[in-house]
Image (tube, rainbow, N blue to C red):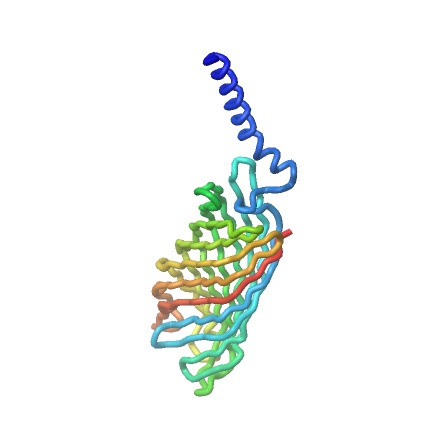
Length: 271
């Protein structure tokens, strides 16, 4: 009896092992991936946010901005994923500093690529750490005159950075998933192009400054179900003083230390 029981038990364990090995493949063939795993495919959506840019004790831009977002994610059977995403955002901002100015056009374009891997972390929880490379471009057009007749100018901001983050996906039941995300944005370098010639002040020339120190982060709290995802987000940057560059005969200028906070809501449709 002991020999027969042992043989029967071995058959059960072998069958369980085989089922465990083939179940991920069966899930993929059936077209029903785990809702807690990173989802493959296209995403498109929109953002609405409150924006605040400030150079302490000097100037600030504030206002509401709207944008579009898009992404494509490729996943592999070994749980690795690769994601390319981008966004465009526009706002007509309020300037305060040397006087005030309304409806200042301000555009942000951002592109990123990241790679990561999904890890089951217990019952109903998956973790998805990732890292990659990102580029952020901002165009601000303050041409014209403020309330105190201060002449404005155009400014182009370029950031190169490395995003390092993690998304958690938590099963809420009935197909609903809570997906908080935290990310550190490691600042690599910034280039600030300032068109001081827009001021028509004799002797001032356009200048490009280099920024070498700063940091950023972003957080998301999203809710996902089937093709839909929506929630709240915050993007933040804190950049130190740039180098000094000549802006005219015997005069040098720098891009001052500044911080940016953008907080709002986002929705996505996932194909």
